[in-house]
Image (spheres, rainbow, N blue to C red):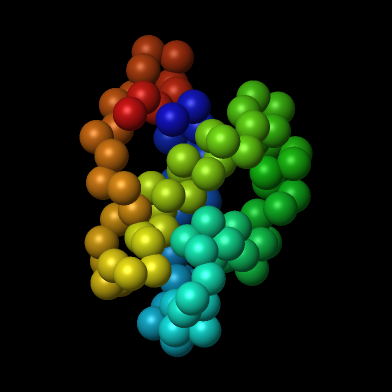
Length: 96
């Protein structure tokens, strides 16, 4: 994952309160990717993505971060996304 740990923490803090049982139920039948990106929009992260993240990464990197933050819809809340083993590289980026 190319996203800096501080940026990942910012995303997680904005998204986590919105990932509720009720919201998950409303997305039944839709894709995990749709749910994850809609959560990021609802969290007000669009400007952060455009102004900050897109200066050094692209949608594939953001999607990897979203999968790490938001569990698939068929998993219970509290289970992390893909349960990646994440390592901080010397340059401050994350490697999985």
